[in-house]
Length: 198
Image (cartoon, rainbow, N blue to C red; front, side):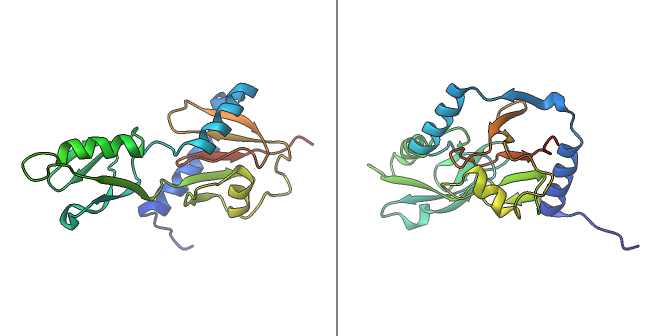
C-alpha cells in the first residue's frame, strides 16, 4: 500500500473536507430567510466583498513604481508595504484601504498620493458533499452556486436537487439556500451539497 503525504494547500484542503464531512447536523443553522436571501443577492450585485486574509492585492501608487506591487494579506489580516509599514486590511473595502494607504504615504515623501487597490487573487472557496470533485477552487467574480457545483464536477446522483448549504466567512455554521443560479458565492465560502431524501 502506498503512503500518502499531505503537504501544503492540497493537504489542508483534504483535511478540511474530511473534518467538515464529519461534522454533525448541529452546524446547520436552518433555511435562510427571504429577507437574508434578498440582502445577499443585492450586496453581491452592488458591492465588492471586503478584503480577507489570504487574498493578494495589487497596490498602485501613481508615479511611484517603487511603492507599487502585489502584496498578500497575512492570516492575521495585515499587509506590509514599503514606506507605509504594516496595515490592517482584512475587513476593509477597496476604497477604505485606498484611503488608509493614502494617509500612510502622505508626508515628507509624498504630498498628495493617489492610490488604487485591486484584488489580484481572491480567497478560494471550498465545496464538499455530493459533488464529483470536492475540494478548493479559485474564486471568480460573478460566481453563483450552480457554476460552483459545475466547477466541482457537477452533482452526484445522490445530491439534493432543491437545496445547498453555505457558510460565509464569519458565520458560525451552514445556512440552507435554494439550489438556484440567483444565489451568489463569495470568497472563502464553504459549500456543502447534501444528499437528497428518497
